[in-house]
Length: 103
Image 1: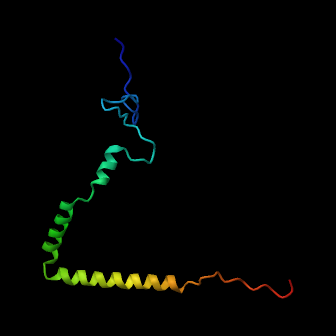
Image 2: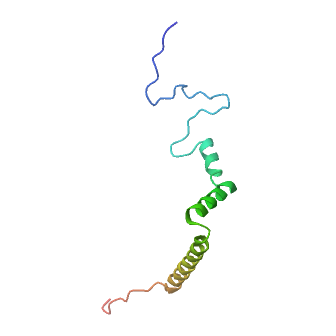
Image 3: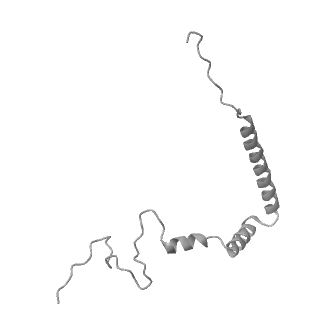
């Protein structure tokens, strides 16, 4: 029986062979594999929101939360109206530069 050299650092120890599920563990660069995309899909579930709300109540107290929500609503309204004003302010037609009379 001959001894095989250990795989190089960073190399796939299985040589790209699929496991029992048929997954080779190799994905194209920059694309998440199946397990990463499943984590991202289930990132925010209803119990997460309940937990976040409970922490907010504990940190800020129940008396401050309505004031904070009111301030956030006002800020969002102001942002929305300013964005609409900027959009309405832009001219409908592009302004053409005047050509010199000599041409």
